[in-house]
Length: 129
Image (tube, rainbow, N blue to C red; front, side, top):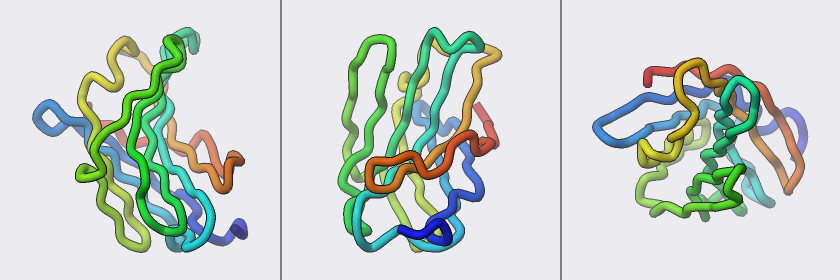
């Protein structure tokens, strides 16, 4: 994947009923070959508690939607019915509990990975929680 493909340009998250809806806008398209992941990394201000909300693609198709609780080492997989995507927009739904434990003053940023390597990190997130 070249650095001109699938650059994460904007991310947002909002609460809708008991669901968190994350939206990722990319400049380019979801790569048609290889692995590509977009996600949010949330943490307490001291990074002692961390959560990752991820949507994973393989060869251009969504294959996984999950949350990873870093302090407990637990991954929770969610149904792909909560994921939609076009060439440049990816949306995923997660249970509101996926960010439990971060509290007020938490840090939240977006990231992307390509073929198992960090591609981008620290992308600002527009929050409506």
